[in-house]
Length: 170
Image (cartoon, rainbow, N blue to C red; front, side):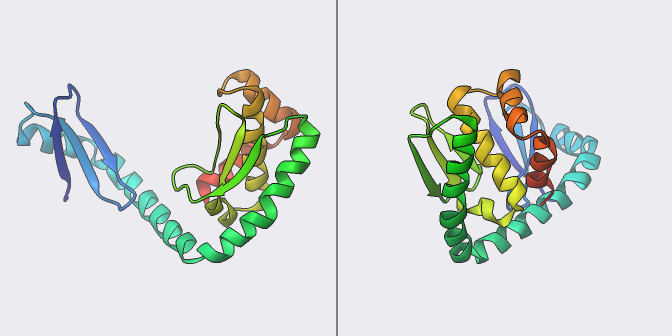
């Protein structure tokens, strides 16, 4: 098994599978090569489970990037009206709505209540897109992920957990 070792002044050892499907071992400077190999061997089952998932995500990401133009257009056409619709329903008004190229998050809400949505979100079912819109609007009232935040989402979208799963499966 090939892996990359990155050493630093850390105290613990960690394992990561990157978006490019590389296995990274983050190890303390003092840890021997033998100890690192034993650590990797100990977590071989985890690696065997997570690596195919990472490969699937990487393939999905390549497909999404190949359709950038049409997904950007769809995001500009679909997301602002959804924000407007749910904004009225929830009584929460963002200061602005932007479409971005974010890769690591589908949406965000800043301290000034400006919402951003990644065009990549449009590669997912519309039910998942609606969930992200409601999630980000809920951040206008609760700038955290507290029980009250999720209660607010559930009030307007009782099936939000199923919609949330769509973002992880696809």
